[in-house]
Every structure is written in structure tokens, then in C-alpha cells.
Amino acid sequence: MIYLDNSATTRPFDEVIALVADMQQNNFGNPSSLHHAGVVAERAMKEARERAMSAFDADGGTFVFTAGGTEANNLAILGTMLGRVHRKPQIITSKIEHPSVMETVLYLKSLGADCRFAEIDKDGMIDTEHFKSLLTEETALVSIMTVNNEIGSVQDIGALAALTKAKNPSALFHTDAVQALGKVPLSMRQSKIDMISVSGHKINGPKGTGGLMIRKGVHVKPILYGGGQENGLRSGTQNTPAIAGFGLAVAMTQAQIKENAERMNHLRKMLSEGLASISGCRVIGTQKPAPHIVCATFPGIRSETLLHALEAKEVYVSSGSACSSNKPQLSPTLLALGCDRKEIDSAIRFSLGVQTTEADILAALEIVKEQVDFLKNF
Image (cartoon, rainbow, N blue to C red):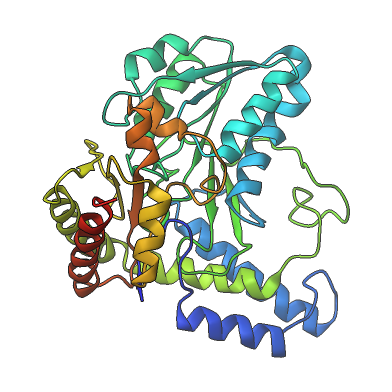
């Protein structure tokens, strides 16, 4: 099997699988319990929290464990804006955000929030001048993703956060860093970012894990109520085994972030150049690409058709974002880039991981070319 759909999910590290199994079997206590089994579970969760916070170079603050990136994005946006919606807060995001941000912002818009959407250029980058024109002294929240999940464009989040704060120091800046964790360094200490959302299963950790990093002094209200776990911000008994596995995945990923990024960048260039040499294929380029995502179009061949043709040869790719690829709608990201319907209908996303090899790329390129040439006959 050649697995090139790592932006959808990753295979957990063997060490993570072993830790989760051990926690399930031997350290299964409720971390809220006062007895020894609960204390052991709480210690494991504390270690995972410290590992997560270290990934963002955070100077204090809080890391709230959630069930993944979607919940973390909802907590960041609804937890800061829902209680203020009667004041019609101004919220700025972009036209190429993940559905868990876009749909949440649109929900607030339906309640009366003043929502504005930054344009992007042909390379998938935020149009800085348009972004600046949207900012006012009334701006309450800005949410811009660090790495786009479909085309891999990397935004200069630090600069956008600085522009936001220069216009209104009290405005909050949030970034969806689900595709950035472990690939693109993020520092809260050296930037004006207030909140960062991440997910565990994108970095070889367990599914159903993730969290929201919140800068010290930023006030977020819960969107789930109950027992008051996670300092009152996320009620519900914590999934301690998965959280421990998430923490280990963060630690392992961050320890090799530079080396992994360099290796994946090399493989991404190999893949991009190889795809570009296939007749009719167009690689969607970007000025600042993430090391692990390549989006290409094959006009004349439906993406679903090519996806299943590759699957038959045990090459696994995606026809877009895994969170929306099963819905019959055109990609907002590719539409914003100016792609026409034929290109969008033929787009394939290849995404690499730390376990991807050069042999995988070479073999995949041969199979893609073979299947494209075959499908062109129909």
C-alpha cells in the first residue's frame, strides 16, 4: 500500500499505539478521582498537556483537550463570540477556511455578527491589502488557518496577527493549525496569536484527540457544560489513554520537526515535478508550500474516477478535504483560486507523512501516469 492521504489522517506511531493500549489496560482510572488510580491518570494527562504546550512555545496560558480540531475551532470562535453576538461583533476570516471554521462563522453571522471574508491571491495567500482594509477598531476576532488543508499554502500568521493587533489591540487572533502542527513551527511567545487549534490524528496520534492552546489572559467561555473538567472549559470525562497518546505523538513529532520537514519537502518536490511531467496535469502552485501537500488537476478525468483507479493499485489519495470530499459541492478553496469547474472536478490531493518514502513517491508517479493514460481513452 502507498498511502498518500496523510492530511486526512495518519497511521499512529507504534509507540503511541502501545501507550494507549497500556493506559487502557493498566492506567484506566478517571483523572477526576481522588484515589491512586485517578492520580496516576491525572499525571499522564498533565504530562500530555505540558508536551502540547511546549509545541507552541507558550509562555503560560492554557491547553484545553478536545475531541479534535473541529471542536477546538468551535470552542475558539463560539467560546469568545457567542456571548457577544447581541453586540454584533466584527469577525474576519478567509474564503478558504476549513468547514469547522467557515460554518461556525456563518452560524454567528446568522445570529447578527458582522462577518467579513478576506480574499486570496492566485497562489492561495491572503491578499494582505484586502485583509488590512477589512480591519477596523471594531474588529473582535480574526480566524485564519496556518496551512490550507487542500492546497498547502502557508500563511504568514505572525504578520497577520500583528496587523490585527496594530488596528485593535483588544481583538483576538485565532489560527487553525491542524495541518501545521509538526510541519510549520508556531510560537506564541514570538507572535501575537491568541488561540491555536490542533488535532492528534494528523500527527500520528489517536483519532478523537486535539485541543485549543489559549494565551494567558484570553477569556474563553465553555460550549459544553457539565462536570467542569478542563478548568471548566470542556466538561466530560477526559479520554485519558488517547490524550496520553496525543501527548506522545506531539513530543515525537516536535523532536524531529526540522528533519521531517526537510525530508518531506524533498519528496514533495519530487512528486510535484513528476506530476507536472504528466500530459494534461497541472499542479496547483503556491509561493509558500507546506512540506506535505500537493494538489493537482487532471482535466477530462473526474477526481473520483482517478481516485478509485489509483485505489485499485493500492495508491491512496484524496479528491479534496476529507471533511467535505463526500459532499457534492465545488471546493471553495479552488473556486477562490480561480479554477474552473473542469479543473475542480478533476482535482486530486496528495499528502505526505513522516512514514512516506522516496520509493513510495517513485512508484506512485508510475501508477498515476499509467492510470491517467488509461483513463484518457474513455
